[in-house]
Image (cartoon, rainbow over all chains, first blue to last red; front, side):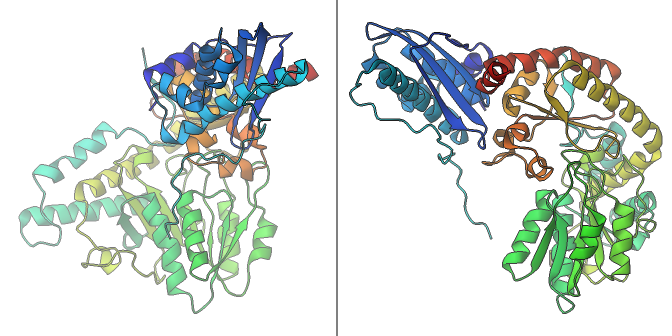
Amino acid sequence: MYSEKVMDHFSNPRNMGEINDADGVGTVGNIKCGDIMRIYLKVEDNIIQEVKFKTFGCGAAIATSSMATELVKGKTIQQALEVTNKAVLEALDGLPKVKVHCSLLAEEALRAALWDYAQKHGIKIDGLKQPKTDIGEHDHGDDDEDIY
Amino acid sequence: MKRIYLDYAATSPTKKSVLEAMIPYFTQDFGNPSSIYESARKSKIAVDEARKKVAKSIGADTGEIYFTSGGTESDNWAIKGIAEAYQQKGKHIITSQIEHHAVLNTCEYLEKKGYKVTYLPVDSYGQVNLDELKNAIQSDTILISIMTANNEIGTLQKVNEIGQIARENNVFFHTDAVQAIGQIPIDVKKMSIDLLTLSGHKIYGPKGMGILFIRKGIRLGSLIHGGAQEKRRRAGTENVPGIVGIGEATALSSLNLEKEAKRLTGLRDKLIKGVLDSIPYTKLNGHPIERLPNNANFSFQFIEGESLLIMLDMKGFSASSGSACTSGSLDPSHVLLGIGLPHEMAHGSLRVTLGEQSTEEDIEHLLEVLPDIVSRLREMSPLYEDFMKQK
C-alpha cells in the first residue's frame, strides 16, 4: 500500500534524532489519532543548517517526517515555508488516501518549529502564522457515509 | 527470508485434507442438492454428513445446525432474527462493549429501528461482570449476545454462567464463538447456549463459510429469502464444497483440541514471559490466564502499532495491531479502549495469534527481533524522549 519511496524513508529515516541546542522546536499532532511529530531546527544566517525529527506514528508519519526534513535542509526560511504537504506528498510518490493527513502533520510541525524559532529570536517571518499545535480534528480522508 | 505467520485470529490456511475433501464437489459431484439425480444425491449426502460433524463437535442435534456465508452473517442472523421474531415480548438486547463489529454494528442498526441496547462495560481484563449483567436484564429483554472469546485480546467470558443467567431469566443467549472453537471445548447444551456463531476460515477451513447453531424450538426469521434450503430458513443453493470444508475443519478442530491447546498455551506463555522480561514499559492486554491458548496481545508504550507491524513484516513476521492506522478508522481498537487503555497504549498494541504451524523457534526468533524493533521506534518517538527527560 505504500510506495517504494515511503518504504525507503520509513526503513531508513533521514534526520531522525534531536538537536539539544535547537533554535526552534515544533511539536504537533494528537495522541488520540496516534500521531505526534516534533521537528528541531538549527538556523544560521537565515538558513536551516540542521534539522531533526522525532515521530510517534504510523509508517506514513515517519516517512513524511523524514522527507519533510530532507526538503528543508540547507534551505532558507522562505524556501522552507514553501514546503507544503503537497510537496512532501509528491516527493514520496503519494500516500494512501487515509494517510494524506500525515503529510499535513509534517507541514504543520515544520511551521511550528519555524514559529518557535521566530518567537525565541524576536523575528517576524513573513507569511508565517501561529500554527495549531493540536491538529487532532484533521481530516483523515475517510468517506464516512451513513450506511443504514 | 522465511515468513512466519502469527495472525491466525485473522485467518488460517485451509488444511490440505480439508481442501481435498472439498475438491470432488466442485468438479465431480457438483449436482445441486435440491435435484433428484445421482450427483445431486451425493452432494445432498455430503451436506448432511457435514451437518452431523458440526453438530457432534459442539454437542448439538443435527437439525440445529445452519450453514451461512460466515461469522458475520451468523451474527447478523442471530441478532436480527431474534429481534424480529420476539419483538412482541420486548425490544431490549444486552451485549458487551468489546464485541466484534458484526455484533456491535448489528445492534446499532437495531437501535435505529427502535430497539434498546445495553452495551455492558468490561473490566480491565475484558470480562463482563455477572452482577452487572443480571442488573441489566429487564422485563422486555429478549437477547443477550456476548462472545465466547475476544478476537483481539483473547479474553474468555464466563459463558457457562452467562448461559445460566439467561435461562433463569427466560432470555435467549447468543454467543459468537468464532475465535473460541477449536481452542476451548464447546458444548451448547452444557453451556446453555441458544444461538452460536462459528466461522470456517479461522479453523483451517474455507473462507466464506459460517455456521449458526439455533436451538430447537427457537423461532428465527430469515435473513435471506428464497428457496427451501436450510429448512426454508436460509435460502440459496448450498455451497456444497464449502459446507464439506467447514464440516471437515470443525471435526478436525475438536479432534486434537486438548493436545494442541496445551502446546499453544506453552508457546503463548513463553512469548508473554519473554516479551515482558525483555521489553520495558510493556503491558499484556487481556486476562493472564483466562485467555485463548493462541493469543498474546501487548501494548508497548511510546510507539505506534502500524510502524511496528511494518518493521516486523520486513523481518518476515505477519501480525496485527489495534492502532487506528490498522483499524481503518480514526480511533484505535474499541476493545483496547474498552479495557481502559489510554489512546497511546491502544495505538501501541501488537496482537500475536499462534496456530498449527507455530513452533518454539518462531517464538524464539520473534523474541530476538522484537526488542530491537521496539527500541528503534522508541528512539524515534517524541513521547519516549519526553518520558526519559522527565525521568
